[in-house]
Length: 117
Image (tube, rainbow, N blue to C red):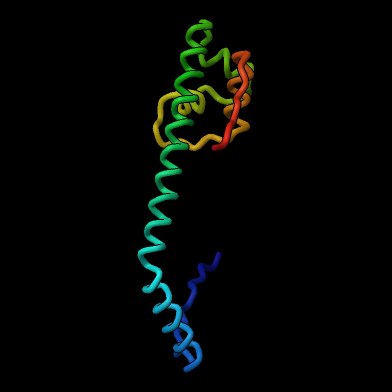
């Protein structure tokens, strides 16, 4: 098999492209503070949602243990692998889908309820 390497091509910008680039840069600089504020607000919302998901997973784990179920028992009911279930319960930076949370909850006889403010 022949290994191919991409060549980098570099061309000069046309005067129109340079002008457009300059205007975009100036507009971005004017709106920099607004962009940063919005980014911080979105990050805070993301962090709050992540806390809610972590809390839901803690509750599911507690319910699983209260019912005396092992991860293998839940694996059989959900089809989600034991290792994946363990990661869900213990790792802080996971981002499970609603479908995954729902499957886990239903295996415990519970349901996921989502609300928006």
